[in-house]
Length: 311
Image 1 (cartoon, rainbow, N blue to C red):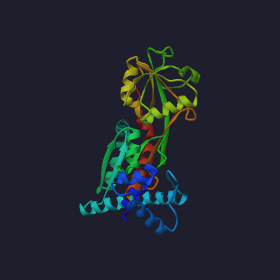
Image 2: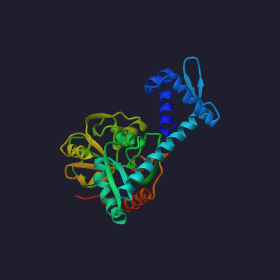
Image 3: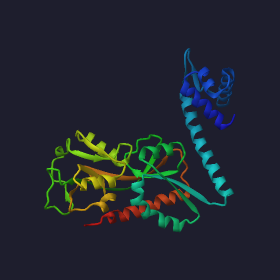
Image 4: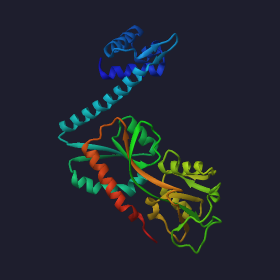
């Protein structure tokens, strides 16, 4: 039986919970599917599913067998991709997932050096929000991703690249606004002033949106979201025009003008942004993927403070 058939069989039985429904899903007869499962169990020497009166329940051995099948699937896809690239006279490709706004700030710090050192490695960008990037990784659409913690998908592993400060922008319409402040200051207020403060935020399927949501939950604060936007640049622009307040990472600071808002920084033990590269736990990290991770770590750690453009 091929790897694909084994995976299809396992997934169908797990999804449907019984052989009849699983067989219908696979467009095969129930006796045929039962025979395939029995052949597999004979090969491994132990039952993979427990036959109950009304359901099929996976055994501990079945759970482990399924995990290894998924790993084999990933390896087979890697092999097919590598062979295809060789056939096309290419030495390699990295399919990289990243949020578009984050890519604007970070990729110019990474790709020039990587592409100079590895001219035969193609970079294919997949620019989507954090949730879609995680799903693309899980489904083997992309190889690795660069983003912000937290990573919510348990099937993914991640490596820390660096951490940076987080800031809050206070508009002129906010009672906390001080026209005499023309530079970044440490946040001088109690966190309770943030409770129900009008906010412009990114949705929780974006990395920055997750950070803000987790921060409010951790500190038992209530968000008062007046606008939701998909880009940090829109949020900054709205605050500069007097609409609400917003949280931004250091990568957004180049868009800030201190003449039309106050900017306060948080201590890292209160609020920070952690940048990571992440990939499937069962994914083989190729040498050129490892090289990309190393260059990203080195360059972003060294140059993180250069994101500032003081005005």
